[in-house]
Image (cartoon, rainbow, N blue to C red; front, side, top):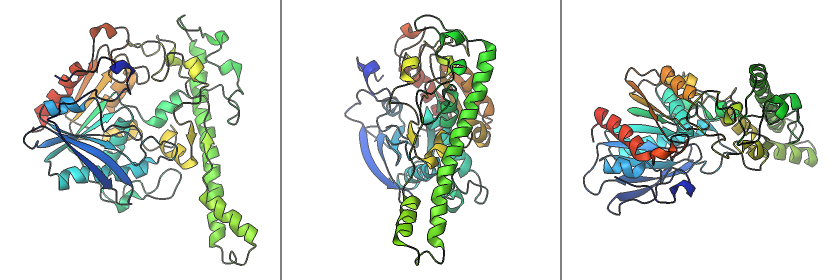
Length: 426
């Protein structure tokens, strides 16, 4: 059984520590139909050719050394750790382009490598990514998404999107935009000023129930109801800003197509060309503000106080690092907006009918028990299974009130490999 390194809690949280030297590793460089470049590593047992491969990917994180890979190979499967064109770059990320990357990965595994069965492992943000992909791939051309939320290419009706055979949602987001909306600080009153705030909506104000950890925070129901409404209002406000920037760029492009454009002044021509080309980057302040982080009576679980980013979200809320912190308008609408993004589990899972396994971590600080149940209920599969792992945080490390149970990964992978073996040939 693969074992985690002694210091794995401090490592990059999704890496495996080591892998048997006999495991065959094949680097792959792939090009999508629009020539976007992606990369991956195909892992196979020392001998033989498995009939089933598990593909794992995330919109932007490095999954080429995902912690599950040694377990899959030991169980006799092949594993493809796949990285998209947006590796470590969510500032410009369009989920619609990611559809083309996944198509290239699945085509590579099916047509070039000859695997009979392909199982999608959607871990964290990969869960909503694969759900979106499979929903589009299983929709006939003509009924697919024709443009990202901000407009422009790609039109998914113009591309071949091969389907896979199985789906695993592991500690999966309900959608990256849905997660970000749930942790947008509702107290922000000026998107250009990180300190401008409405005290009546500040979840980190003691008058609203906040207590500095480790003291216990408890919010009133009336506060929570208003807070959640204003979070959606703030998301809509940022959407409007993004659409305004896109409209300005489109206006410049339209000016360049005008019949008299060539006869206009060089100053006008230069400005229009630059405005049409240059994106207006947006800064989204204070995105560590989900009341569930501190009030553990909300959506009860084994989780500890804090988020997957920090045990002190009241401080991290003002730090330079954060989800969707710096984005183009198009990336905001496609990926990070809970209102505009098409990559939502609730919309896509009903169209996903292949055998499905939904797994939650009972100590997860960002994906809550209700999220996991909702994903299971939304799945359109007739063959679907729900499982929870005790003593596990979002990254399937030991965490939460049952963290003393030890490394959860062997227990998790026993569930994943057994479920897969029961349905797909090794």
